[in-house]
Length: 146
Image (cartoon, rainbow, N blue to C red):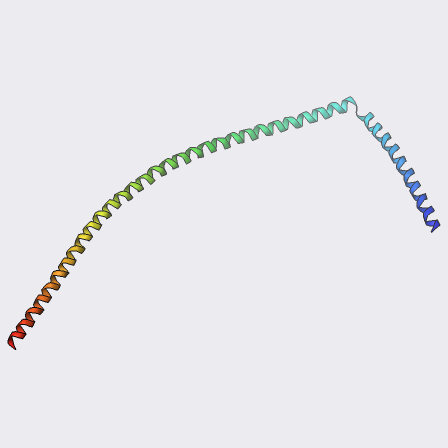
């Protein structure tokens, strides 16, 4: 076991040494990269960025135009919906008025049917009375002959 601990400590020290070298190398690499950014390269980068934003601006103008078209379409659709709603209100009012007129007509029909029913009832009563009178007359006639 004592050999294992010593070996682990040695490995740890070598890794630590390696990491310290890497951090030194990083500093050197960053410094070298910073020296490579000359004014010319920065100007090139600036022009590329400007061209990119010009392209983005053009695309936004196209998008704005498309939104204007969509707004116009929505305005047209909104106008059509308003027109349809007005037509529907007018048509629904006409249907309601017609239904109310039919209710009045149906009331008159009910009264007429009620009158016919009363007439039929009185006719049935009169007919029943006539039948009973005829039956009573026949009974009287039979009783008189016997």
